Image 1: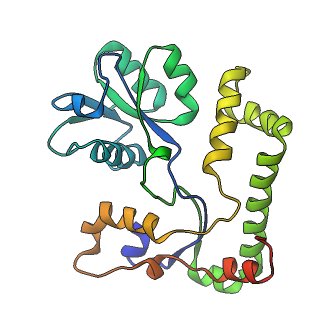
Image 2: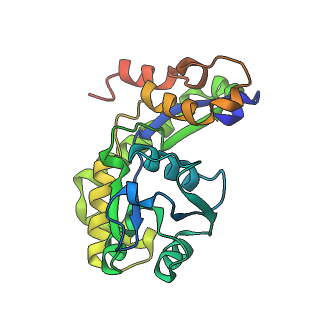
Length: 235
């Protein structure tokens, strides 16, 4: 969406997850988001996805991320968890796949963004406008393959776990089972973007609009989805 605001003809063609698959974890002494006021928190880097998600989680918990906390750039998920353990920071945003490990380490899980009312085009298919115009059939095929993959994941737990084990490079049964349950919960085989999700992004990056007015239709190209729906694919 930033690219679109800056003049690129980039379009959102489908969204297979309209909610974040992330949680906010903290040191054991922190039991609610508001207790982070005056504390230090970690993101991977300023302006990153983790920074954006962190801001949303803090706002949802009643804090102003620009005034109520000190945000540090720490690095990847492992580095951020280590920073909490060492006392360098008190909280961070993490992919939900880390929840079993985080609980074993004694961290508190304060906010699950999948449980909030925050909509967001978390996993989306983007295409350049001219390329989409020339390759609408290809876009439809991509959407069909994504939708069918999600259906298979939701219907065939045995093979889904094999794929997750390979993807996460772990044999930990609890982690694999949890990752599968999250995928079933967050992924949608009907990959339609939502106005609420687009608005969440606009609210966060509105300063990039530079006086221009942007709407849902400025970012989303529904042609492939509408054709598939008309053909009965999503029944």
